[in-house]
Amino acid sequence: MTAYPWLVFLHILGVLVFSFGHGTSAVVAFKVRGERDPARISALLEVSQVSAGVMYGGLLLLLAGGIAAGVVGQWFGQWWLWAAIGILVLSLGGMYSIASPYYLGVRHALGQRGPRDKVAPQPLPEAELLALLHSRRPEALLAIGIVALALIAWLMVFKPS
Image 1 (cartoon, rainbow, N blue to C red):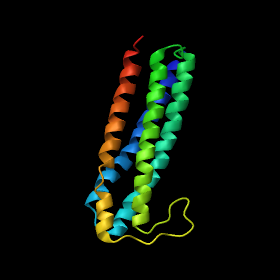
Image 2: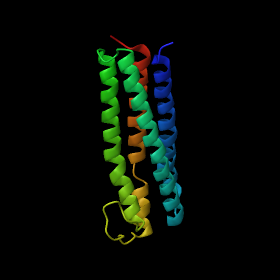
Image 3: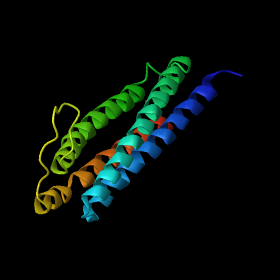
Image 4: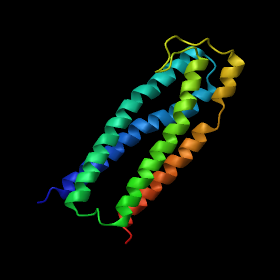
């Protein structure tokens, strides 16, 4: 028996762990819209932040298993593999560039420090916080994620030549 099926298994397991962690953040992105209590919003953001650790662990596992399976299976000469990697990189970069400023803005609106802040900012009035929470960024993130995941899954299953 070769290592290839085990590497594919690790890759798929990484996708599942990544999706679990990322899914939690996605649910939080929609849930905070209905909240009015800054303490509850802060708690939801903390759940999202913790789930990001799970997401990044899954990302490492899916990359390690996928790259190893690509080497063992000799897939790196195929365009579909490079397309899948490109879609992953572009979607992660795009989603990060949309989500990070949004969540940093929400944290600032709550009066919380960001990673580069020396002091906590002044909390915004409730009306401004609520306006920020009603952003359409979660829909944009969801659309990017679903399209990217569907394209990558299609490439991996059908392996077009």
